[in-house]
Amino acid sequence: MPTTYDFKNPRLAALDGFRVEIDAANERADIILSRPPYNVISMAARDQLRLVFEELDEDAAVRVVVLRSDGKDFSSGGDIRGFLEASPEHVSKLAWNIAAPARCSKPVIAANRGYAFGVGFEISLACDFRIASETAQYALPEQKLGQIPGSGGSARLQKIVGVTRTKHIVMRSKRISGRQAYDWGIATEVVADDQLEATVDALVQELREFSPIAQRTAKKLLNDTDDALLSIAIELEGHCYSRLRTSDDFREGVEAFHAKRAPAFVGS
Image 1 (tube, helix red, strand yellow):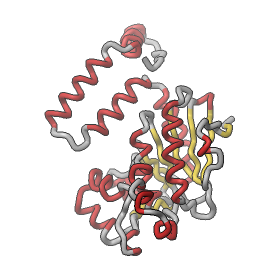
Image 2: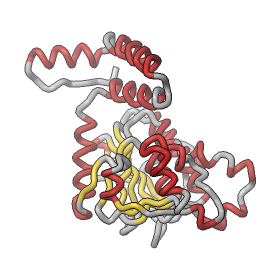
Image 3: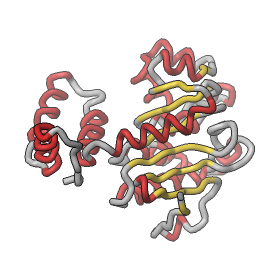
């Protein structure tokens, strides 16, 4: 059964609007947004979320991180008044904090249902996999506040869907459904609302079957070459491939393949 995660960092002694659970048997950590009714993400929570991802990244017992929420909505976005009260220095760190899932070397899954607006959308875009319920609605509504997305939302979205669709979402503050997000390549999968948890559970188990070192390498390579020239990306891929050839996991994978058995990866 999942238990509350015991953090080392004293700044995480009292989490602001979310909790973290560890499922040791499944090598899984869940970050659960929990501020009823809409799971608004405060300025303090942004700082804490970064620290949480950094600490989970260092925990060898955690293989996969899941970002999800309580209730019918993932998150309606950030604390709007908090932007007026925050210092320029604090605001300048918003994108760095929300990019924590992308920097985490482990696979990170976002489970989205209901509203995923503003920073709720942005932090989901920083995850590796977005599993959307059919009730999911994504939006970057900052234009309605006389602002633009400030935590990487428009930049990440443009990489995924291109400038035309990003302008549609950002400049018109348009909502898109989970189904449309899947059709546009934003969501990894779209499932019935009552299948969201089961689909995430299955993905966690699938990812755990692979080599941890191969997963870390693939994630970093894909992130680092997202905006690289094709020739450079191919060159870096070759270097990563070469390094993995000397790993224990690659040897185990080859031996298991020829022995027609499941591999027992150790992450080295």
